[in-house]
Every structure is written in structure tokens, then in C-alpha cells.
Length: 198
Image (cartoon, rainbow, N blue to C red):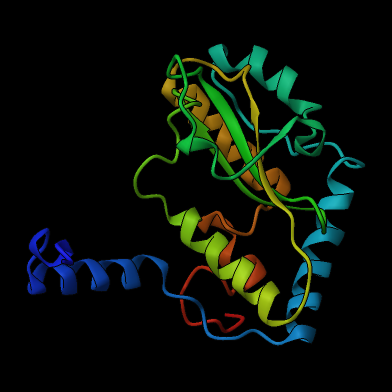
């Protein structure tokens, strides 16, 4: 006898289904040529990042040491992890860190973030999870390859304000397309759920 029906009422099941749809609805199809061109433009810019000095900006005193370390930071050289890392069991909450979501097949730096607890980041809701689902789906529909991963830099300042300042500098430096600060710059198609190159 199937007892699953007793776990949730019919209205609860509909609510769970609607919630799942809202959080993970796929973007409308993006064509192969559009996707290739978008990736090419982002990769071309990010390739030049290591060749040019970063723009100078006023910093907090407690950020100076992290800034000097982060200046030469190349996210593509950090050890990659699976984007589902947050499902693993950890013996501790982790450390203050900067993290980078990367498509290693392209290679493209898609998202820059900061956290005070690296082993717990992404538990629960995080918009970037939806963007990654949309990104993977666009690649699947266009029979293109992607290899998504996440990398952590565990030398970020422990003070939240200093971490956020460093995060902003790295978002600006790399122009990571999944960060909202750069959506208009790249016309990012994976964040709106509409699928058009905005």
C-alpha cells in the first residue's frame, strides 16, 4: 500500500511543486551561436585580466594585507571542488573565504562570492544555484560542454566589511557575469529566467 499520500496534503504537494518551479525554472532557450558568442566575449575579457594591473581604489587599512595577497590571485589556479560540495558532511563550519564559480571547460569565471563559513556556504537558497541550472540547461540544449566547479581562497579577511570590499574589487576586476553588478555589462541570459540576451 502506498503511504506517501499521507505525508503531505494535496495542497502542500502543489505548493512544494510551485516553489520548486519558481526556484529552478529554466531560462528560455538560448541559441548555439548566441551562447558561443556570449562565452567568447566573457573569456576574451577575463583572459586580459591577468595581463593588466587592477584599477586602484581606496581601501580600508585592515584590507591592505588581503588586497596585496589577492592582487595576484588567479581563481583558475585554486583547487576545484564540485558545486554540490555543500551537501557533504564537514567536521567544522570552515573559514572566511572568497569563492569562485567557474566553468573549467570554457574557462570562464562566472561568479565571485564571500563567506565567513566556507563549509556551509550555499546551504539553503542561493540565486547562483538557479543560474547554474539555467547555464547547464543551455549547454545541454545546444549540445555544448560545460564543467562547473567552485574554488575557495581561504585567506580572506575575517571582518565582514573587509571581505565584502575585497569581493567587490574581484567582481569588478574579473567582471563575473553571474554577479548582479555585471548583468547589464554582459547581457547575462541565465539570471532572469527569460533567456534573452538582455
